[in-house]
Structure formats: structure tokens, C-alpha cells
Image 1 (tube, helix red, strand yellow):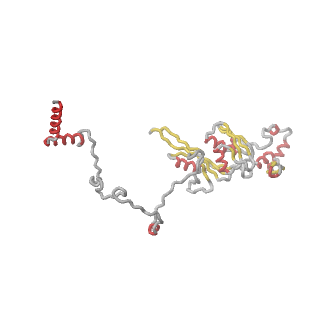
Image 2: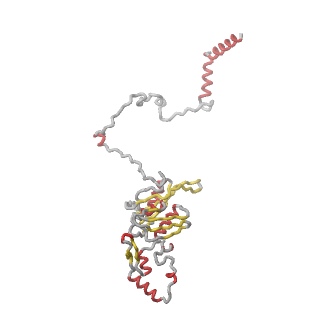
Image 3: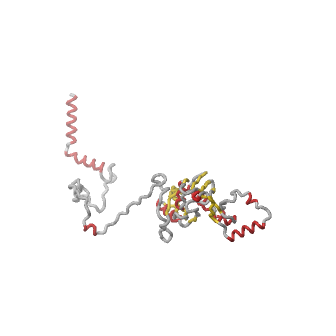
Length: 334
């Protein structure tokens, strides 16, 4: 009996579902659920203006796609036809590849080309190198504003160099501003025999202290990587540096320029002391070689000053530099 009752119920349900009179009711119910505005939970159909919906259907617009509804065409990769060569074609600008930085693909340590003056003239004898690239943020009324800050050093490999700091929304814009600003503040650095510095010296900027040591030809540059780039742009080939304290890029660059500008040349030493400057060089068999002599006016001034004094000058007797090169004061540099 149970099996017969269940079969009868199923037959009745199928009969009720297949009733032709109730099909319209099911259609209305389905339309209320899936279609219409504000009726049911269905998604509203979006109709694009100006486009025939019939063309959006498959293969209604007559479009042919290779490998889908059309055969694949294989073209030979030979030389271009003469007709195609005659037609002017737009050259695709290739992305410029930069050299490797200090640490892989980062910006510090990369050469970024020649700087440009305010008149738009490109200085081909100058080269610029990125020393620092960092992200900075500034809190404004509209929210936190993030920008890029770059520091670039530019030089001509012949004793002239400078540095500049620029900001921009992108690294390229910040580097461009810093590179063009670096050539506006150039410094001339004296070099001994066009390969090294004149004497050993020590300089301090804030808490950064750098010791510079003069070296013979062939020694090379053994110093911090930022100082090495500055020395290369200046044309210094042999030098050793020892950095003590923080190595913040901005403080390091300022201390480097301050130290190189404070060195005293052989001629300045001869004019200050009124004596000849003598060096013992290995290429001359360690024989004394006069490298500078005092000018006539400076020598007479020193002799007169010494003859007028009845006593010894204690500053000369207890000179910490022992009559050798004396670095210039920071107040006299800038």
C-alpha cells in the first residue's frame, strides 16, 4: 500500500506540474523573481547605448577570429617589401637601460646622463650619478602627500663637481630636478699631479668625521662608495678615506666637499711660510724635489714680519702641523 500511495502522489504532482493552465503562472512567478525593476532579487540587465544587442551575440557581426572560427594564417618572417619600406613608420621608443647600481636595480650608484642648464643646453662634458633615493611624506590638509627625493652628484672628471637635491612625484622627475640643480652649485677642487690630494687632512660635519689620506699613483680609491663616486667625478684616482660616525648620504656628501675644499696647495703653503716646498718622491729615487716656491711679494712680507719681531712666534714653534700643510677653516670656504 505504501508503494502504491507514493506512486500515486508522484503521478499527481507530475500531472499538476504539467498542467497547461498553470504554465503561465509559473512564467509570471519566474519573471517576478528574475526580471523587472524592483521586483524580486534578480540582477538588472544593462543595455549599452548606441550598440545593437544583436551584434553582441556570437558570430552575428561577421567577425573572424583565427583559430576560432577561421583558419590560422602563417606568415613568413622575411625581409619587408619595398612598398612597406617606402612608407614612413613610427619608431617605437625603446626603454632606456641604466647601469647596475650599488645594490642591484636600485637607483643609488647609477649614472643618469648629462645635466641640462636652465636654457635647455645639455652639458655633454658632465656626468651625473645618483647618491640617494628615498620616499618622503608630508601631511597636508588633503591628507598625507607622498613624494620622492633624490640627491645627485655631477662632475666633469677634471676637478669640478657639485651636488643637488630634487623632489618629484616619480623617481625620474626627482632625479631630473636634482641633476639639473647640481650644475648650478659647482666647486673647484685642487688636485696634486691630477691624481690625488695634496696632504692628509681631517674634516667634521655635524657628527660625521672623515679622514683623507694621500696615496701614490696606482693605489686606487679605497673609501666609502659615495665618496668614491665623488672622487671619480672630480678626477681623483688615488686616495684613502676613513669615515667615523653616521653615514647619512647628505652629511657624507657635504663632509666630503668640505674636506676636499679645505686642503692647502703647495703654492699656498710656500706663500704662507715664505719657504720652498720640497718633496721626496720615489720616482726620483727619494731625492728632494722643489714642488713650489714663494712668490716675491709673499716672501718679502714674511721676511719683514720675522725681522720686526724680537721674540719667537709661539704659534710657529708649537705648530701642530709642524710647518706642513694646514687645512683651511670652514668659515673661509663658503
